[in-house]
Image 1 (spheres, rainbow, N blue to C red):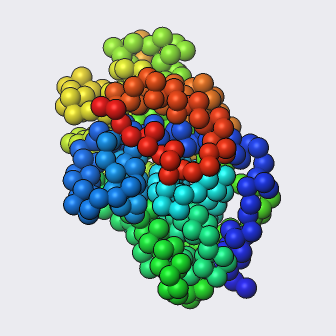
Image 2: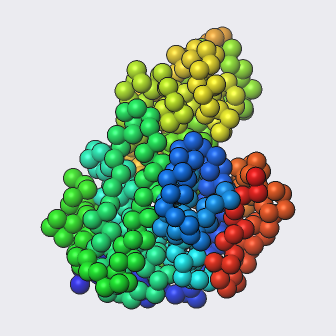
Image 3: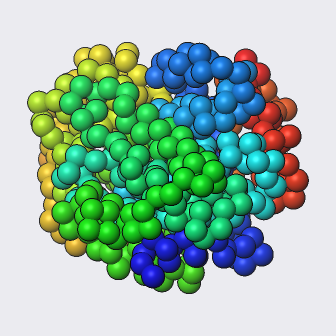
Length: 458
């Protein structure tokens, strides 16, 4: 058998009772994180335009998180995936450099509603979605994907969503193979959003969730897809990467779970900016440095992320939109110095236009540091070096930024993030109920009956 069929067999055989307790806990943890970013993302203009489109697709029963709307299930997945990626605070897997939760959770939630699945069924499906999506991301390699102009969240995500949906629809091995085969003809996600700071990156996970569901639904009706879509001559690994390592797809499968190696974001920007921002904040806070004391700031960044957050320099030093700012290391560094944080309030038009921020950005220098790349993508390291006007120098290196599995947000910190993101849209009573129900999510008998709790109050 080939890679595609081996993945399908693993997926068909995985059962809830075989999952370690820490894996089940991690699903709940990341689901709560996704709900929070989805609720806050529902307020973004890109989400509102998506909702206008979805409403025209007809009535349905799929919950659109943080709103009062419902839609046909595949379109609720599209809406929730797009909204969840809008604020750049959704989870990330470092080794594959992609965002699994914002694809897998929308697909799993919508399909669970459609199928009347249980909490245990949902957890199984989510674990598999993360597993497939991340393994494919590691195999194609982040730098290879970027060099080809593809966003791996969109391309690999379609496969992850197809497996999650297939599991929830009760497909066996052959059906899962076909679903992945169909998904391979829908894998998409152009990086050209960087050119004008447009909204298409936010669309990628929503489209991947919808596409994965369509693939599974077609397979359930008997539609056939190629059985070698991943490893074949014209398959995914060859078409989407110049240097894929096929061995990484199945390496160690079953001996550990990729969902445990997934990070959570505390800052509202690109994952490649998070470690440098942590380094800056560490220096500023530990030494109580004021912005007026800073003469120059030098940040060491990874080569893999340079073209996302530091190139071309003329664009990164003059962001024109929220998306531009979310992918501008000079901007992220400037607000970290000036405001000692890099949250949603910092990535707003008024801050982007601020003359104070523009002046601070001119003091920022971004350098690709080859030493940092030695442990990438296992580690996403960064350095920061601050030179003050009185001649002092402060330096630090971050090996694991806040939110990494090695330096995680505690459950308490994650719950605080959830409340911060959702308090404008949901009452305290509803928010507390959602948090409480995460504790025993596996006991839910019918997701279809449970899901309306995710609707907005305001």
